[in-house]
Image (cartoon, rainbow, N blue to C red; front, side, top):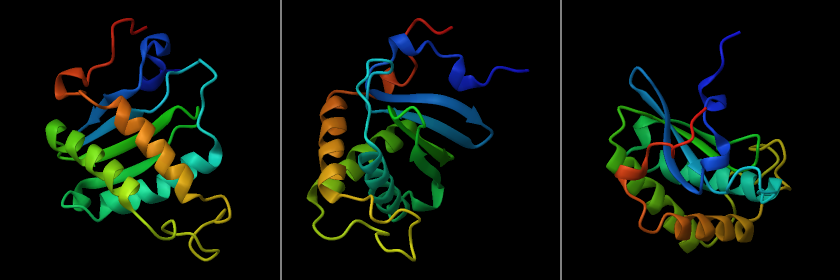
Length: 155
């Protein structure tokens, strides 16, 4: 059995940030790591779910919207994956920061927060999305394109 790329990274060396996880043709998978893995510091489901709704909506409605392939949470509850077609790393990093700021500034209902739009619509909280967005935006302060490679210690 071939080992998948995400299991080939030494998670003991990952800190909150943005990393290029893999490139498949014209699609780049970004690892948006909001938490340090294996520390017990995990996002709760409502935070993950709420950020997913807010981030995906803002990103798909941005100037890069036609390049967004997917945005969703990692099962380990320490971040998200963002898949972008024809990615320019600097542009993607700015998009991430811009979307996090939009989440912080937003007032209203969480996007897709109805029974018809979501399979667990009662598990959404704008306050939790904002708290997670602020935490991650703070972690990205000073983050640059030069830091997009995983830290040393890859398996």
